[in-house]
Image 1 (tube, rainbow, N blue to C red):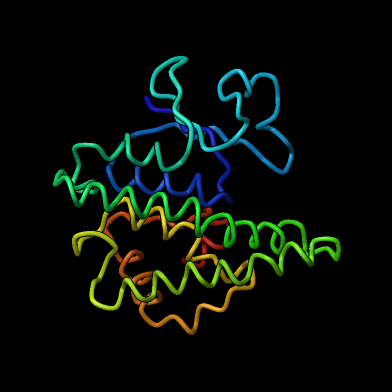
Image 2: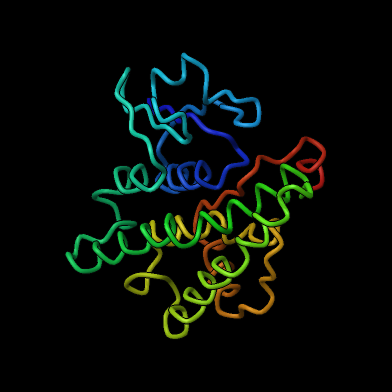
Length: 209
């Protein structure tokens, strides 16, 4: 069985959980609490010397790191990764965009606000995330003007990668109400078969649902 080392609160880990669930692929989740530095232990560093999550264990002692590389590996041969050469490359284009122009700003702002509590010493760093974060959202809004999803007018791993941190961007102080098309796309992603939320429901929340 596949094994995923990750933190339920991490968008990068959520990508993998969402994809595996939608592919109806069985997997074991091994929780790694990054706030407790559990990805920096000697035992974990033997698995991934870069000390990052998520990490996919494909078979005993065979590991694959980097969230979008994991998405690409798992979706190969499925409808979530186009076989057409150009469409395939366009999926990769958005995976690269997410990691270089989106995640470093939107995800980091979320971490500073939600997990660090916006301490004064991070005020400058947080402010520096705003403009490039909004620039990434602007690019997404423009791209979605004439299409329902990011590649080939259908749901792919490009949408999974971008959804992970976009749908919680407000937790980092980003105002999403100005993005009509992005919000429409977020709703379409939420309505995909076998969609699951990022964080598992608390017992009290399950009772209400």
